[in-house]
Amino acid sequence: MPRGLDTTGRPLDGSDKGSPSFSDDFGGQVVRPAKGATSGSAVDSVDFAGAVADGQADIEAVVRDSRVDEVLEQIDRELVALEPVKQRIREVAALLVIDRLRAEMGLGSERPTLHMSLTGSPGTGKTTVAFRMADILHRLGYLERGHLVSVTRDDLVGQYVGHTAPKTKDVVKRALGGILFIDEAYYLHRPENERDYGQEAIEVLLQVMESERQNLVVVMAGYEDRMEEFFQANPGMGSRVAHHIAFPDYNVDELLQIAQLMVGKQGYELSDDGERALRDYIELRLEQPRFAHGRSIRNAIERARMRQATRLFESGHKLSRKDLITLEADDILQSSVFAENETAPCGP
Image (cartoon, rainbow, N blue to C red):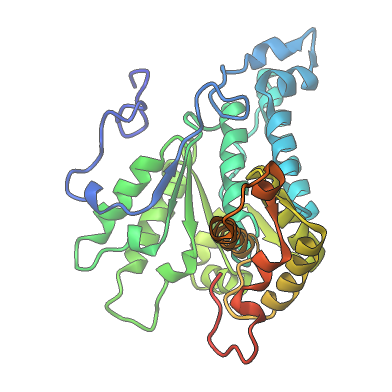
C-alpha cells in the first residue's frame, strides 16, 4: 500500500472526505492532536531498533524518545483522584513498551489486544482518558494518526433498511489510525424493538475490530451495569475487549478540588466564603438528579462566572484586578440548588 494511505486506501491527511452519501450525516466529534504542542501526539516516530544493543533493551530510551512519560504526567495533572484508572493506564503503557522491545529483540508475540471498555458515571474522565490513550498508542507506534472520533448511536445507526452499514463504515473510515470512542454503546442494542437497526452496526463493528485491529482501537463507554448487560447480550463484542477500566464516582472533597483546578485554569480564584459556598453547593447538588460530576462542576463554575460578571457590571464602581478575578459566595449561593422548595430537577 502506498505511503500515506490507511488500510482502506484513503489519504491520511484527510483530503478524502469519505463517503459522499453519508459523510454529511456525521454528527460525532473528531479530536486531533495539535501539531507542535508539547503535549500533543505530533512527535517523530521512535527508533525502537536503537533502543536495543548488545542483547540489551533500554526501556528508558523508549520512554524518553516517545515522551510517553509526558502523557502519563498529563493524566496525573488533568484527573483528580482516580488512582485505579491511572494505574491501569500505566500498566497498558508498560505492556506496549515491552511488547515493542520484545519485537526488536526478535521475540515473537502477537500485537496486544487494545480495544477497551471504560465504565462509570458521566463526567468522571472517560473521554479524557480515551484521548490520552490515543496519544500513548500513537507515540509508541501502535496508531498511525493518534486522533479520536467520538460518536453515539445516532452516528452509527440508520433510519431505514440499508442505511446503517454504510453509515457505520463511514465512521470507521474516519477513525482508522486512531480511536473510535462510542459513548453509551449499549444503546446500539435494543432487543425490544424488532425493527431496530442497531444490531447491524454491531455486526460491522465486530468485523472491523478484528480486520482493522492493526489500525483501529475501539473504546466503548457507559454505565457499568448497562455495559455488562450489553456484553452479555453480545458475547462476540465482549470477547474482543481486553481492557475493562472502571471509573469511580468522585466524593465532595475531590469535586471541590476539581472545581478549584477549573477556576484557576480560567484565571479566577475563590474567596474563602466562596469556597465554603461551593462546598455547600457540591454537597447539595451531589444528591440531586442528573449530576454529572466534572461536567456539572464545570457548568456550575460557568454560571458563577456569569453571576460575578452581572454583579460587577451593575455595581457602577471602578474595578480592581482582585474584583475581576474573585468569585464570591453570592456568585454561588444564587444557584437554584439553594432555593427552598425547589421541585424541578436540576441539570448538570
